[in-house]
Amino acid sequence: MALAFTSGVVERATGTTIPGLRGAVQLAVVPSGQGAPLPSVAGSVAFGLSAGAAVAVLSRRGGGRRRGGRSMRLATMDAPTITKEKKDLSGKLPDCPRTIWRADNIDIDNIPQPRETAPLIVDAKDLAERLKSGTEEAYFVAEREKIMEQLQQHGAILFKNFETMKDAEGFRAFYDALQLNPCLDPIHTSGLRDMIGKKDAVYEAVNKPSLAQHFVGLHNESTFVKTAMFGAFGCFKPASEGGGEFLVADGAKIIGDMDKDVLRRIYEKKIRISVSNLDLNFIGALPFGQEAVKESLQDLILKVVAPKFEMDLEMVYGADQSNPWRLQAIEHAQSPINTHPVTGQPVWFCNLHNHSRYLRDRRPCTIPEVGMTDVYHGDLGQIAPEDVEHINKVCERNMVPIMMETGDVILLDNYRVLHGRKVFKGERKHVVTWFESCGSENAREMTGDKPDDFMNNLINKTLV
Image 1 (cartoon, rainbow, N blue to C red):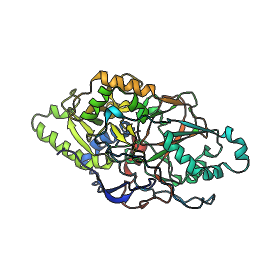
Image 2: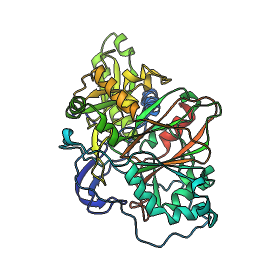
Image 3: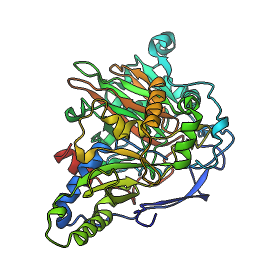
Image 4: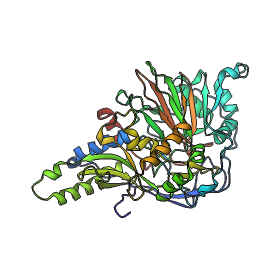
């Protein structure tokens, strides 16, 4: 892909060990460089792409090959001492880790079914006697290894009726007790999520009034370049006027339920996700120099603005065939199927259910045109509507809606389980923290080469 801007290259080789895994699961990473400063001449175009990415990026995905199950590495160490003093994480989080792609040579006709599925429910009411003898935090410390094993088996765990996780401090105590190591959101620079609790690494979930009536389809929180290993979603306040159910779906179940011909077709052709539309219609009104202006703007956005989002984007005119002056930001071709980096289980690792324009046009959507997304085949050909409808039906058949109450937390394996959110009314306060690993301290430096907060702050204050 000669025109694609590559923000990073991931190679499978002996190199950096991925924490949270047992065995020789390793990769070498050539990190992306810092994007160039945003010049004033690109201001309006930058805002357009920023707005589009901010509302469009509600996640993406990853691919590569792996066989044979491996259990999650849990560091052998004494249980951590429970203290009220927590390290301030403001400005100290490492970047989200690179996506682990293992999508080659998957046997579509022989995909194993998972023994367990999501979500497993752990209800504090069922643990009343157990919790009498100590604090909830002590319970999480004692059960850490079991909980992480259950997460690997089921893909997601819903913790209900606990008192601890009703605010940022308690939410932090929960994930610290499980020795989960936080990292930046995979789409931190998009500004979609404001970090409302920086010292505890707590992001706001999609609660913004402008997106309340927007249905968030199923997706993994990832891009072609970056994917968090785990995520924890907490409810501090359910929607005051109803709705806003959290959605989970097991990617291992989705892939098993899909028609083999449809699955094979989309796997072999791959997919590309368009994350933003910039309608540069003024170019067509220029009396001369249209092609020169067209190419200059394409090159400017590719080199100056796109790197801020670290999503391996290519800028393409007219991919949706609706407007020759529409410049679309489109991700690299990628597999809709991945294999889990620990278990080797093939999973549906694709955000088509969230990003398909065909589906968005047929359900509640409040995204402006600049932020409208779409999904194409790897050659930018249109995906047949009947294939999209089949994928939608399979996703919805496996979708589990969960009405979370104050203090509830959903812990999920981001490579295994997709998530989403129904529309809501009123005020809603849900939060999320993403994690690069479990076990010992973060594997990578908590400072150094990583996205800054410029785009996140800019978009949250001015655009979303």
